[in-house]
Image (cartoon, rainbow, N blue to C red; front, side, top):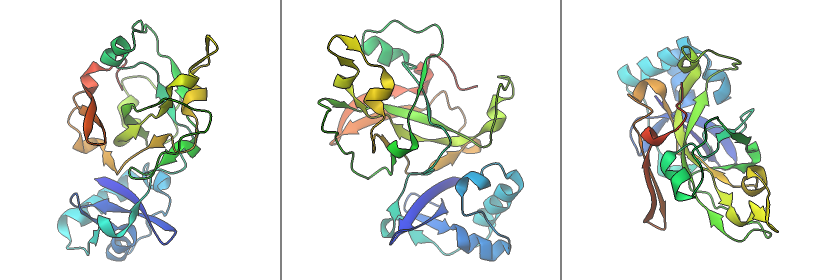
Length: 233
């Protein structure tokens, strides 16, 4: 299952991708199932039974499709409770910036206001100089969880999406002082995401995914999730 969040003339909804160019809107499947599908994606994610019904409809029923080109693609989840980012979690990236390989997880938070769609413009803050890109794999948690054992962690993973952790690199160090990650990564529009969420059942191995970052078609990053220092489960 691939979920795309979109807007038309300011009205936001979501649908289910059937190929890379077309999707089936949520309300079309509602009509087939004769059952309400939550307007809020976050309410759909923990409902395994409803998700299975939707998946069966997509596979077995001929449904009207809508071209992706006819809508504006929004961030797949616009208002998550938290955006938790792991710092220096790719071995090749840590080596690239000359950092020591961390022995323990170091994380920081990005506010939801950083989120934009995959084709929206990144707005450079007036106080920032050098803007950097960081292609990442985002893990979508389906429901609230706390102190979960690693053996059960994947039960809470709904799926994955592309995430660009945009950074005002010069703001991390100012006047010879380390200013931290939040200051350099918290600005509005500093987290382009999407264009869709891919459910976990469609990803054979999340630790073997190629990640490529391009700037104006030039490849700037070419890595793989196998380089993660701290794994997902």
